[in-house]
Amino acid sequence: MVVYDLACPREHRFEGWFESASSFESQREDGHVSCPLCNSREITRLPSAPYVRGKTEAVAASEGMQEPMMMVAGDLVNALRQQVVQHILANTEDVGEGFADAAREVHYGDAPVRNIRGVATQEELQELHEEGVDVMVLGMPDSLGSRH
Image (cartoon, rainbow, N blue to C red; front, side, top):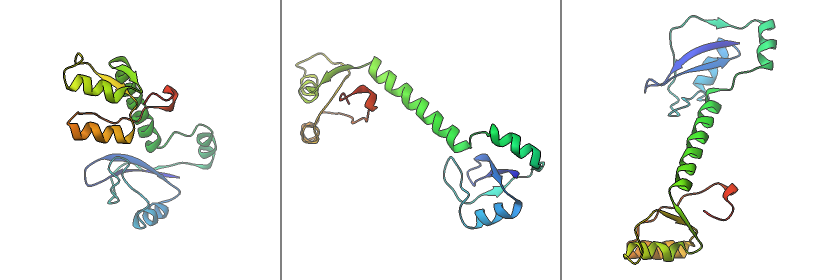
């Protein structure tokens, strides 16, 4: 196993683990190596001290294998999404199925200005758009039940 420091043209730096130097080269040439941040396939190997894992080390490492960078990035995205969802829940009023009517009332000044969330059909969303009512469609987690 060899570990290389890699970079894309946007200077995103990341680590790649390969069976061998030739495995890295063939994967790179075939377009199978890409930047985890921007998906560029123009990858260059950065100068670094080479690290080659021995057989005994490989067995120990496979038991506690580190997650690839993409998994870590995915975990960060999920954590950020969860923070956004919590912020929305804490700072909006759930008007449920009456979202379209509540949005109109706020828009036309018939109700106090406030942040609301709820459920609307595609038809209701189209009507709100045609009336000039600003709404944003957000996919909320299923754990909130039918309140999206």
